[in-house]
Each structure stands twice: as structure tokens, then as C-alpha cells.
Image (cartoon, rainbow, N blue to C red; front, side):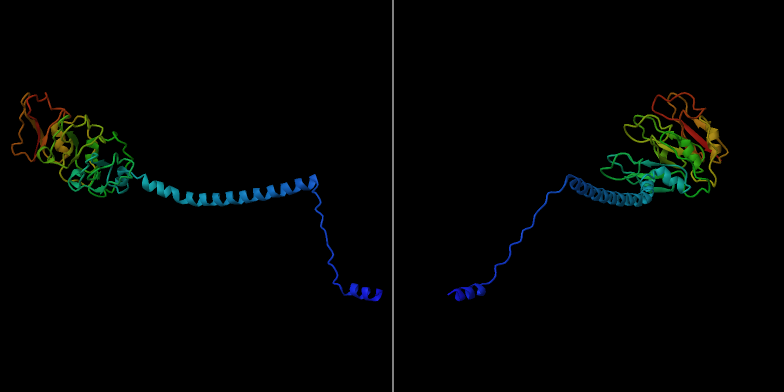
Length: 285
């Protein structure tokens, strides 16, 4: 019986041995070392990200000045780099309606861009135009910038080779007309000019030049108050005089080679007109 029991015991499958693993607690020194290692990994990753962002920023800086320069080009800048004298923008928001006819007789002009720093208020209809002083390249050194209010109408005319110049039209109802009042190059006057004067509630003022067509070289600077004769001489005429007597004035052109609305900018203008008439500066060949 003992033998059978022994055989039965030998035929049973052996039980697998149960193994145990022990988790030993980390020592304080080991925990500090692990924390430092994790912190070092985080710092390294942050440093790599910072270096990547810095490299991207440097790449952006290489192209940024060109973009800023393009967007910062004013009307005056664009005219000057074209050697076409100084320039200014014509057109008043919200109904701008600026056109090439506002820039004079064939002067260089550009459609003004709303992104230009001197564009002013946005237009709800129409657009603005950038007017340059000359028709084309005057073959002169690039002029310095002309901030608003630093240039006279006379200076603008002289840069383009159009002789002397003056602003015509009296606020508040200006109503100056290039065809009726100016036999020279004529453009819309704005507060860009230092001699523009008070703003118009209706109509417009004009920057009237003595010469209809440009000469090859800019005109010498005009004195602040030339005579009508000086005005005509700057345009190549033989002489000039003023017609019209205050207070009614009623000056007439009477067949003169060129005729202009006279203003008190002229030294021989005399007394002002009070009864609605005007004086005329007449140029003779």
C-alpha cells in the first residue's frame, strides 16, 4: 500500500514555485538625484525650443526692414526717388474723387495707396492721387523730404521748372478755377503747402504756376512777395502788369499772352477788392 501511495505521489505534476520580488524604498539621496535628473531634462528641452525660436526671429529680421520700408513710402518719397521733385496727395475723404487732372498739365502722378503714411482718412467713394512736382526726371539730385507745411506752392512750381507759383482762391467759398484763373500749370492746393491758408467750406484753392510748360532746369527760388512783373519774367514773358482798381476791381486780360488771378501775395497788388470783382496779373510777350 505504501508503494502505491508512493507511485501516486510521483505522478503528480510539480507545483510551480512562487517567487516574490521586493520593492525597496528609495533613499532620500536617490530621490534627490532623480528629481535633479528630471529637472535637467526639462531645462534642456526649454533651451532647445528657445534656440529654435531665436533662429526663426533672426530669419524674420532679415526681411522685416524691406517690408517696413515699402509700407512706409509716402507720396513725397515716391516722387523724390523718381527725381520728379516733391509730392503730395490730393483727395478729401469721404468722397475723395482725386484724379490725374488735379495734378496739373501732365505732371508725374501715381494712384495713392491707402497704406501710405500720408494717405489720411479712407475714402468711401473715389480715390486719392499722388501729385509730383515735375513731368518726368529732372536730372537733379534727389530732394530732401518735404513734411506737410514745409513747402510753398511757389517751391513746388519751381521744382518742376514752371516758374513762380502762388495759391489762388479765398476761403471760405474758394471757387478757384484752373481754366479761368491760371494760364500756367495748375494743381489742387491742399494744406500740404505752407501758404495754403484757411480751409475751404466749398470749392477749392489751386496752386497756380507762372509757366504752362516746364523748362529743363528748376526755377530759382521765388521771393515771398514778387511783383506781377517778376512773376511774368519767371515764365519767360517780357513784362507784366496788374489790371483792376479797388474796390470793384473788375480786372481784365485784354489780349495778354497769359493772364492770372492776382492775389495779395504780389507786392504790387494794392488795395483789396470789396465788391466781388478781382484783379489780374497780365503777362506780355
